[in-house]
Image 1: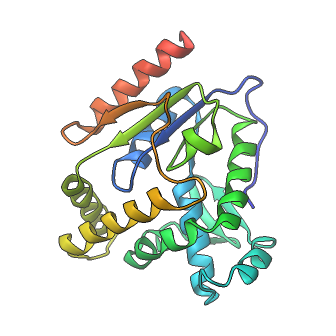
Image 2 (image 1 turned 30 degrees about the vertical axis):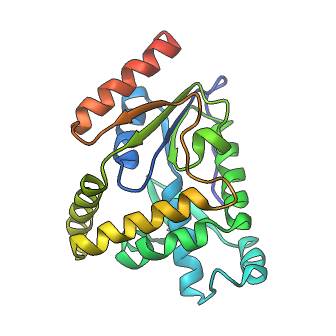
Length: 228
């Protein structure tokens, strides 16, 4: 499903988890650039799968069809952009509709298992910064650095509304806030790899922090662990 490349002989793994809107993707991308590592946006992978099944009009309840389609579904990261069957879907997967539906598909065990297998394979070949909701607890249990980001509900909703507007989408603050709370409930209660902080993860509340401050905090942690 995801193309893989040869990478470092001794790869390092940095896992960054947290709920929707906590700043995972923004922070992880910058940390990866700072450290010279590969950034893996697992959220984009789940969004890509969600878009695929919505376009095929296959609902989450149809697990037999989902399992069959997963065999041939082709997702690729090309120049840091998500492609589905050779089509750039980077903007499409950030739409309000995908925001509303992604948790419905992401909680399906067959989908999580398929994507987690791909994520582990990538991390085994190169040094990565991988963000998601189950990276430190399920995907990369032995990651050298595990970070759990959080923020208040209102701050996460504010950030998500800004992101949507920057991408040309419009949604009310109240709608976004309600969607975030629903996603939190679904993500934390699903039977397969629920959202939770790993016992050995370092928690950072980003509510009142700038992006630069969070990046600096994580960079210091990585440098302490790797003795760079």
